[in-house]
Amino acid sequence: MNKFSPDTSEQYRPIIERWILRTLIDLRGYTLMNMNYGLEEYDKVLIFIGLERLIDKYEDDRLEKKKLRKILKPLHKKNASLRDLKQGPLFNNMDKLAELIGMNNTEKELLSFCMILNTVREIENVTEILGSLSSANIINALAVILDIHTTKVRKALASDGLLHRTGLVRLSRDTGQLFYQLTTFTDMSEVLLDD
Image 1 (cartoon, rainbow, N blue to C red):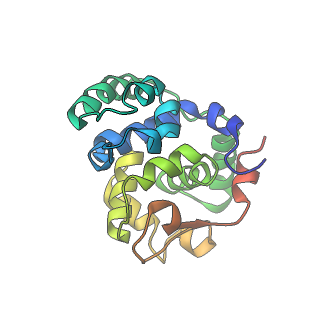
Image 2 (cartoon, helix red, strand yellow):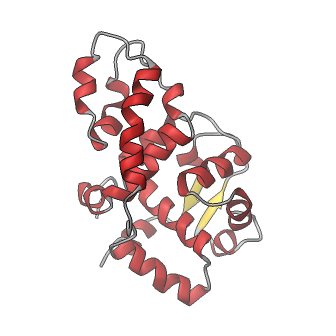
């Protein structure tokens, strides 16, 4: 499987959409989008969540952020009502790995997110909207995106935590974009996403 596989995007679409919408609405990522010159910069994310019509409609016109929020809110609400989003090989393999090494639910959620972040371009693109973040802000962003209490995320990503000790996920203490601040084993996504 190569990085940014369309198969992975489709297989995990509902959970990816949830993470994208939480980033745009709950983290107010939509307010950070520069829409003065159209929406082309965000085309992959908007297409993924079914809003491709906005790209053409606002090619030359400015889309007001309030209007974008109004468009995103119903999508967010609809996606939030979906259940059983954790289906597929990744989540099956995550359960097996958790059993082997004793990961808790927070650690499984974080590792699952990182595997998809490293594989699906739209997640990387939407987290880029958040800009450069400190490690504390990354922890807060992950807590919102994954709907996990900040304290649990902080503990799971601590240098004495299981994810860090095993090298499964390491949080850089530098400031930067979320995608670049979470490091995982090279090619581990391919293994965990495989049947």
